[in-house]
Image 1 (cartoon, rainbow, N blue to C red):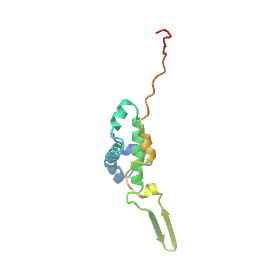
Image 2 (cartoon, helix red, strand yellow):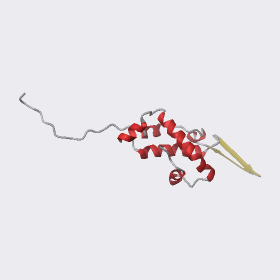
Image 3 (cartoon, one colour):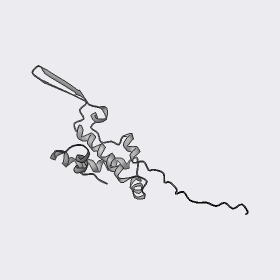
Length: 126
């Protein structure tokens, strides 16, 4: 399973050439990190208990987290002449690390198979 720079751009923003060049490697790594908690993920995709689009969505979210903060900056301060400003990054972004969070893990958790409703008969004499 992999995602492309176009997949990322389709839900976030256009990527620079440098960012787009990182996507294939990040895609591969995000897939590997999903297989750690869900080693049978491919089987679940094949049997339909996990939707392939949900897996792609989780991978895209993981990659965007890294692209938003590739240097793992926690706080950024800038000043120019008599102006200064600072920004603190959300902790989910400030790690700059590629990881599967709880929501993404829920997205790749197999759904129970639902048995189709049917007619059953019970013998009263037997």
